[in-house]
Image 1: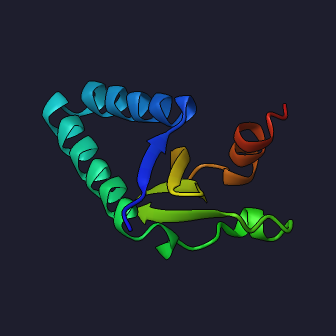
Image 2: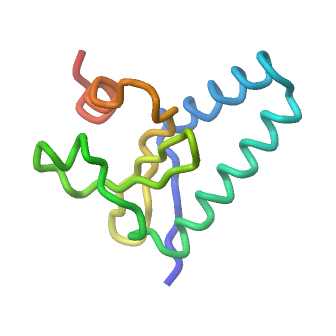
Image 3: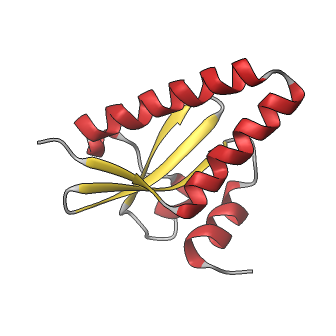
Length: 109
């Protein structure tokens, strides 16, 4: 069964920020290529959405329903609900993920 992968508004903003950063600091062509490869990762999720690992930052606090896949250096964090996969975060894994996840997933300051 094929799942639909949907991006939250935050995940769309993440992609836009990634594109802008690479287009500005490298080239628009490289930014497009990166987005194409990320889209490929998202397409693979539609085939096997439960293949991702559980993010340790969430699992350590007892939250096990989120999963992640890596596209170095990026982490794509998502949740499977019914027959859909919802992408909540696409971020450089070198960032402070605990703070980012806290803000993003729990709407905390």
